[in-house]
Image (cartoon, rainbow, N blue to C red; front, side, top):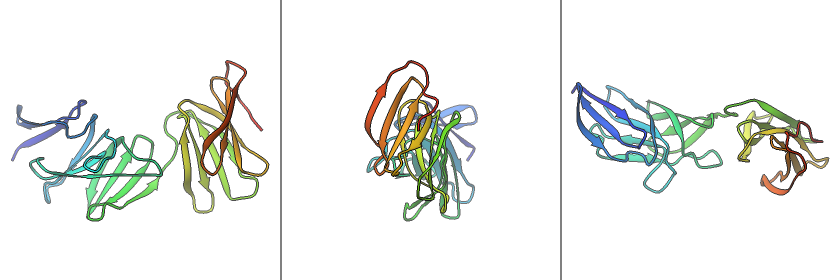
Length: 212
């Protein structure tokens, strides 16, 4: 039917016929619409954008051909996913790429999500340390996250966002705590089981390059 759809930074979707704007889907997402995908098979439209998961909303939505009704998918990777940058759809599944570097597979019928790939995002990985007794390691990055990895199963076990670049990391001798050196001279002590901050101290204005 010669329609073109475009997502906007304010969350709207514009519907065009040739070069004429024929309709606006207001607030398709609460934040910017970064990606859209459709197929000729059934004409359903997938949108991905920035939106906090709620009962009626989410960062991924599946729309009818007219973009009048939609179904939202709430995604989690241990933490709610609210920023989606790419989507693709086929064989009853939606493939999702997130701002945080995950690739997820979502079932259309049951809304079950499976994280296929994850990792750090922008910047370097400056901190890496092995657990003293388990097949587990921890990484710290310029993206402001600390992530714990299962080396045997090759999967992410847990992560936490610290809000600014992390430059180094080390386990305690018993493996129950982590020391994290930050870019602004602060170092943090985290409890491994919860990745919550147990203590912190700052005694310099430059990056902490090593902790042990």
